[in-house]
Length: 67
Image (cartoon, rainbow, N blue to C red; front, side):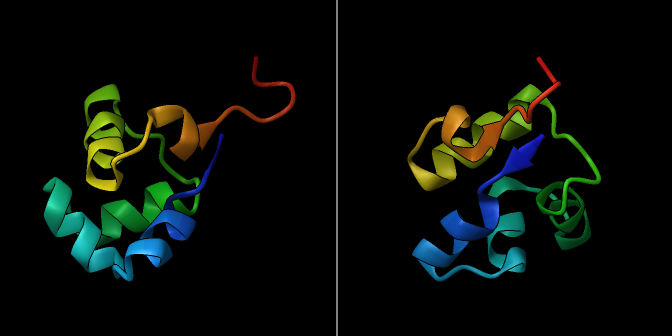
C-alpha cells in the first residue's frame, strides 16, 4: 500500500512529530506508517484524513496486485 502522508504533511508544513501529536500516536509509529512498514487501523486512517481535511482514499492507495 502506498500513501501520500509526506506530501500532505508538506502542504501543511508539519513535521512527523506535529502530525503524530495531532492524531495521538508516536512519531516513530507515524514514521512506520509513512514509510509503508505498518498499515494503520481504519480509525487511525480516518483520523489522518480528518487532520488533512481529505479522504482516506487520497492518503492511501492499493498498489498493483494488492486488489
